[in-house]
Amino acid sequence: MIVYFIGTGGSEGIPAHLCTCPTCNEARKFGFARRLPSTVAIITENKKAVLFDVGTDIRDALQVPLEAIFLTHWHHDHIYGLYKLRWMALETPLYAPEGQADALILNEPKNLRPKTIKPGDTVEIDTLKITALHLNHQVETLGYLIEEDGKSIALLYDTKGLPEGTWEFLEEKAPLRLAIVDATYPPGTNDPYHNNVDEAAEIGLKLAKRTVLSHISHKNLPFLQLTEYVRKRWGNKVLVAYDGMVFYV
Ligand SMILES: [Zn+2]
Ligand SMILES: [Zn+2]
Ligand SMILES: [Zn+2]
Image (cartoon, rainbow, N blue to C red):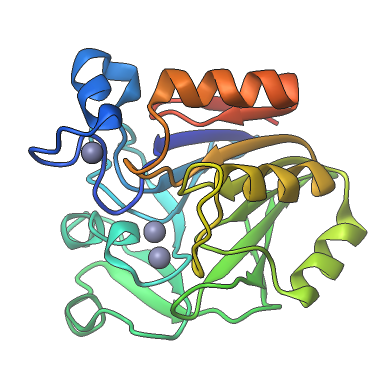
Protein backbone atom coordinates (compact mmCIF):
# COMPACT_ATOMS: atom_id res chain seq x y z
CA MET A 1 0.00 0.00 0.00
CA ILE A 2 0.96 3.62 -0.37
CA VAL A 3 0.30 6.24 2.30
CA TYR A 4 -0.33 9.66 0.81
CA PHE A 5 -0.19 12.54 3.29
CA ILE A 6 -2.48 15.21 1.83
CA GLY A 7 -2.69 17.32 5.01
CA THR A 8 -0.36 17.10 8.02
CA GLY A 9 -1.34 20.14 10.11
CA GLY A 10 -3.59 20.84 13.08
CA SER A 11 -6.76 22.92 13.15
CA GLU A 12 -5.32 26.24 12.05
CA GLY A 13 -3.16 25.02 9.16
CA ILE A 14 0.27 26.55 8.58
CA PRO A 15 0.62 29.44 8.04
CA ALA A 16 -2.29 30.45 10.26
CA HIS A 17 -4.02 33.51 8.85
CA LEU A 18 -1.99 36.67 9.64
CA CYS A 19 0.10 34.84 12.27
CA THR A 20 3.68 36.10 12.54
CA CYS A 21 5.12 33.28 14.68
CA PRO A 22 8.40 31.74 13.42
CA THR A 23 6.64 28.59 12.15
CA CYS A 24 4.09 30.56 10.12
CA ASN A 25 6.66 33.04 8.82
CA GLU A 26 8.90 30.20 7.65
CA ALA A 27 5.97 28.63 5.80
CA ARG A 28 5.46 31.83 3.81
CA LYS A 29 9.09 31.51 2.62
CA PHE A 30 9.20 27.76 1.96
CA GLY A 31 6.20 26.08 0.39
CA PHE A 32 7.15 22.67 1.82
CA ALA A 33 6.61 24.04 5.34
CA ARG A 34 2.92 24.77 4.70
CA ARG A 35 0.39 22.37 6.20
CA LEU A 36 -3.28 21.70 5.51
CA PRO A 37 -5.39 20.02 8.21
CA SER A 38 -5.23 16.26 8.61
CA THR A 39 -6.03 14.17 5.55
CA VAL A 40 -4.42 10.83 4.61
CA ALA A 41 -5.18 8.54 1.69
CA ILE A 42 -4.20 4.88 1.47
CA ILE A 43 -3.76 3.52 -2.03
CA THR A 44 -4.10 -0.27 -2.01
CA GLU A 45 -2.16 -2.81 -4.07
CA ASN A 46 -5.08 -2.71 -6.53
CA LYS A 47 -4.77 1.10 -6.77
CA LYS A 48 -8.02 1.66 -4.88
CA ALA A 49 -8.19 4.69 -2.60
CA VAL A 50 -9.44 4.90 1.00
CA LEU A 51 -9.47 8.23 2.81
CA PHE A 52 -8.78 8.81 6.52
CA ASP A 53 -10.09 12.19 7.66
CA VAL A 54 -10.96 15.00 5.29
CA GLY A 55 -9.38 18.10 6.80
CA THR A 56 -9.27 19.87 3.45
CA ASP A 57 -10.67 19.92 -0.08
CA ILE A 58 -9.02 16.90 -1.71
CA ARG A 59 -9.92 17.51 -5.34
CA ASP A 60 -6.50 18.80 -6.43
CA ALA A 61 -4.73 15.92 -4.68
CA LEU A 62 -6.97 12.93 -5.34
CA GLN A 63 -9.78 12.71 -7.83
CA VAL A 64 -10.57 9.00 -7.99
CA PRO A 65 -13.50 6.99 -6.61
CA LEU A 66 -13.10 6.44 -2.86
CA GLU A 67 -13.84 2.93 -1.59
CA ALA A 68 -14.61 4.45 1.81
CA ILE A 69 -13.90 7.38 4.09
CA PHE A 70 -12.98 6.85 7.75
CA LEU A 71 -13.09 9.63 10.34
CA THR A 72 -10.93 9.57 13.45
CA HIS A 73 -13.32 12.01 15.16
CA TRP A 74 -15.68 14.91 14.52
CA HIS A 75 -13.38 17.85 15.29
CA HIS A 76 -13.53 20.39 12.49
CA ASP A 77 -9.93 20.05 11.33
CA HIS A 78 -10.73 16.43 10.43
CA ILE A 79 -14.00 17.07 8.56
CA TYR A 80 -13.74 20.49 6.83
CA GLY A 81 -13.36 18.85 3.43
CA LEU A 82 -16.52 16.77 3.85
CA TYR A 83 -18.76 19.79 3.34
CA LYS A 84 -17.59 19.90 -0.27
CA LEU A 85 -16.80 16.25 -0.81
CA ARG A 86 -20.36 15.19 0.08
CA TRP A 87 -21.44 16.58 -3.32
CA MET A 88 -19.31 13.99 -5.14
CA ALA A 89 -20.96 12.01 -7.89
CA LEU A 90 -20.55 8.53 -6.33
CA GLU A 91 -22.15 7.17 -3.19
CA THR A 92 -19.39 6.56 -0.64
CA PRO A 93 -19.49 4.98 2.83
CA LEU A 94 -18.40 7.26 5.67
CA TYR A 95 -17.32 5.34 8.78
CA ALA A 96 -17.27 7.59 11.83
CA PRO A 97 -17.31 7.29 15.60
CA GLU A 98 -20.11 8.58 17.77
CA GLY A 99 -19.47 11.74 19.78
CA GLN A 100 -20.30 15.31 18.77
CA ALA A 101 -21.17 14.28 15.24
CA ASP A 102 -21.70 17.17 12.85
CA ALA A 103 -25.41 17.69 12.28
CA LEU A 104 -25.04 19.18 8.80
CA ILE A 105 -23.16 16.15 7.51
CA LEU A 106 -25.53 13.66 9.14
CA ASN A 107 -28.75 15.49 8.16
CA GLU A 108 -27.60 16.34 4.65
CA PRO A 109 -25.01 13.73 3.74
CA LYS A 110 -25.70 14.04 -0.03
CA ASN A 111 -23.70 11.12 -1.48
CA LEU A 112 -21.99 10.17 1.77
CA ARG A 113 -23.41 7.04 3.43
CA PRO A 114 -22.65 7.52 7.16
CA LYS A 115 -22.11 4.42 9.32
CA THR A 116 -21.05 4.23 12.96
CA ILE A 117 -17.77 2.50 13.80
CA LYS A 118 -16.67 1.57 17.33
CA PRO A 119 -13.36 0.57 18.92
CA GLY A 120 -12.67 -3.08 18.10
CA ASP A 121 -14.75 -3.08 14.91
CA THR A 122 -13.00 -4.39 11.81
CA VAL A 123 -13.96 -3.43 8.25
CA GLU A 124 -12.57 -5.05 5.11
CA ILE A 125 -12.17 -2.74 2.13
CA ASP A 126 -10.55 -4.11 -1.05
CA THR A 127 -7.25 -5.67 0.19
CA LEU A 128 -7.28 -3.76 3.50
CA LYS A 129 -8.35 -4.94 6.92
CA ILE A 130 -9.08 -1.87 9.03
CA THR A 131 -9.55 -2.10 12.81
CA ALA A 132 -10.76 0.83 14.92
CA LEU A 133 -8.87 1.57 18.16
CA HIS A 134 -9.73 3.74 21.14
CA LEU A 135 -7.57 6.89 21.59
CA ASN A 136 -7.25 9.54 24.36
CA HIS A 137 -8.78 12.83 23.19
CA GLN A 138 -11.47 15.40 24.08
CA VAL A 139 -14.22 13.56 22.20
CA GLU A 140 -14.67 9.93 21.14
CA THR A 141 -11.70 9.38 18.82
CA LEU A 142 -10.56 6.35 16.87
CA GLY A 143 -7.13 5.33 15.70
CA TYR A 144 -6.91 2.73 12.97
CA LEU A 145 -4.76 -0.31 12.36
CA ILE A 146 -4.58 -0.84 8.61
CA GLU A 147 -3.37 -4.24 7.43
CA GLU A 148 -2.66 -5.50 3.92
CA ASP A 149 -0.92 -8.75 3.00
CA GLY A 150 0.91 -9.15 6.34
CA LYS A 151 2.02 -5.52 6.46
CA SER A 152 0.46 -3.12 8.91
CA ILE A 153 0.40 0.55 9.78
CA ALA A 154 -1.29 2.47 12.58
CA LEU A 155 -2.87 5.90 12.34
CA LEU A 156 -2.80 7.39 15.84
CA TYR A 157 -4.31 10.87 16.06
CA ASP A 158 -5.68 12.90 17.77
CA THR A 159 -4.40 11.51 21.06
CA LYS A 160 -2.36 11.99 24.20
CA GLY A 161 -0.51 8.74 24.76
CA LEU A 162 -2.55 5.59 24.16
CA PRO A 163 -5.21 3.85 26.28
CA GLU A 164 -4.01 0.57 27.81
CA GLY A 165 -6.22 -1.61 25.62
CA THR A 166 -4.86 0.03 22.47
CA TRP A 167 -1.25 -0.49 23.65
CA GLU A 168 -1.93 -4.17 24.30
CA PHE A 169 -3.60 -4.68 20.95
CA LEU A 170 -0.85 -2.93 18.97
CA GLU A 171 2.03 -4.51 20.90
CA GLU A 172 0.76 -7.90 19.78
CA LYS A 173 0.91 -6.72 16.18
CA ALA A 174 4.35 -5.07 16.54
CA PRO A 175 6.60 -4.36 14.86
CA LEU A 176 4.32 -2.46 12.51
CA ARG A 177 5.81 -1.12 9.31
CA LEU A 178 4.70 2.40 10.12
CA ALA A 179 3.12 4.40 12.94
CA ILE A 180 1.62 7.79 12.10
CA VAL A 181 1.43 9.64 15.42
CA ASP A 182 -0.07 12.88 16.76
CA ALA A 183 2.88 15.26 17.36
CA THR A 184 0.92 18.49 17.71
CA TYR A 185 3.24 20.29 20.12
CA PRO A 186 6.96 21.01 20.55
CA PRO A 187 9.15 19.10 23.03
CA GLY A 188 8.37 20.05 26.62
CA THR A 189 4.69 20.93 26.13
CA ASN A 190 2.27 18.97 28.30
CA ASP A 191 -1.23 18.99 26.85
CA PRO A 192 -4.08 16.73 28.01
CA TYR A 193 -5.35 15.97 24.50
CA HIS A 194 -2.29 15.87 22.21
CA ASN A 195 1.30 14.55 22.26
CA ASN A 196 4.40 16.63 22.03
CA VAL A 197 7.14 15.52 19.61
CA ASP A 198 9.02 13.41 22.19
CA GLU A 199 5.88 11.66 23.40
CA ALA A 200 4.85 10.90 19.82
CA ALA A 201 8.26 9.50 18.86
CA GLU A 202 8.30 7.31 21.96
CA ILE A 203 4.97 5.72 20.99
CA GLY A 204 6.11 5.10 17.43
CA LEU A 205 9.51 3.68 18.42
CA LYS A 206 7.84 1.09 20.67
CA LEU A 207 5.43 -0.10 18.02
CA ALA A 208 6.86 0.38 14.54
CA LYS A 209 9.97 0.22 12.38
CA ARG A 210 9.33 3.73 11.13
CA THR A 211 7.36 6.59 12.65
CA VAL A 212 5.91 9.60 10.90
CA LEU A 213 5.02 12.56 13.11
CA SER A 214 1.92 14.39 11.90
CA HIS A 215 -0.97 16.67 13.01
CA ILE A 216 1.62 19.40 13.58
CA SER A 217 0.53 22.77 14.97
CA HIS A 218 2.03 26.18 14.24
CA LYS A 219 2.90 26.17 17.95
CA ASN A 220 5.43 23.43 17.15
CA LEU A 221 9.01 24.21 16.06
CA PRO A 222 9.44 25.67 12.57
CA PHE A 223 9.76 22.94 9.90
CA LEU A 224 13.55 23.06 9.41
CA GLN A 225 14.27 23.18 13.13
CA LEU A 226 11.82 20.36 13.84
CA THR A 227 13.31 18.19 11.10
CA GLU A 228 16.83 18.76 12.47
CA TYR A 229 15.72 17.95 16.04
CA VAL A 230 14.07 14.71 14.94
CA ARG A 231 16.93 13.63 12.66
CA LYS A 232 19.56 14.19 15.37
CA ARG A 233 17.64 12.23 17.99
CA TRP A 234 16.23 9.32 16.06
CA GLY A 235 18.00 9.17 12.67
CA ASN A 236 15.71 7.87 9.94
CA LYS A 237 13.49 5.87 12.31
CA VAL A 238 11.34 8.94 12.87
CA LEU A 239 10.30 11.32 10.11
CA VAL A 240 8.38 14.59 10.11
CA ALA A 241 5.38 14.44 7.79
CA TYR A 242 4.84 17.10 5.14
CA ASP A 243 1.95 17.76 2.79
CA GLY A 244 2.44 15.66 -0.33
CA MET A 245 4.67 13.07 1.40
CA VAL A 246 4.28 9.56 0.04
CA PHE A 247 5.32 6.50 2.06
CA TYR A 248 5.49 3.08 0.41
CA VAL A 249 4.69 0.23 2.80
ZN1 LIG B 1 -7.11 17.51 15.16
ZN1 LIG C 1 1.78 30.85 13.67
ZN1 LIG D 1 -9.21 16.70 17.72
